[in-house]
Length: 103
Image 1 (cartoon, helix red, strand yellow):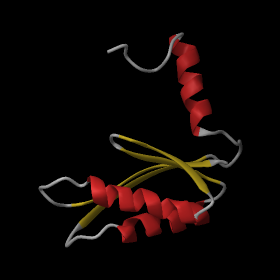
Image 2 (cartoon, rainbow, N blue to C red; image 1 turned 45 degrees about the horizontal axis):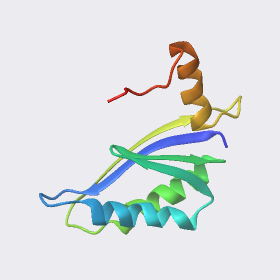
Image 3 (spheres, rainbow, N blue to C red; image 1 turned 120 degrees about the vertical axis):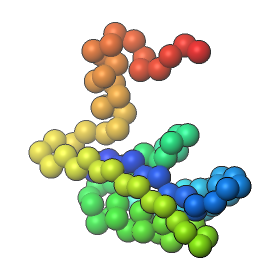
Image 4 (cartoon, one colour; image 1 turned 60 degrees about the horizontal axis):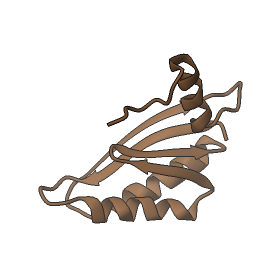
């Protein structure tokens, strides 16, 4: 997989957004992507941008509300095939440790 993205989609509301975020994450299951959700968004990996955009559209559409905010950041490496985990491992090699605190 060579397209990696960070997706954040949520309704604009005062109360908890977790149920609607869960709907967005569940919508990704219908696509040929891998993903991992973290507190700030969901990292998605796809073989090409068309599959990524289709998955993102489904996630955006799955969230109900009067107003929905979606932020998408894409890293489309076109000359090499690199996974999200390989990108993190590269940073960790430079650090000489895991890229997280021990808190």
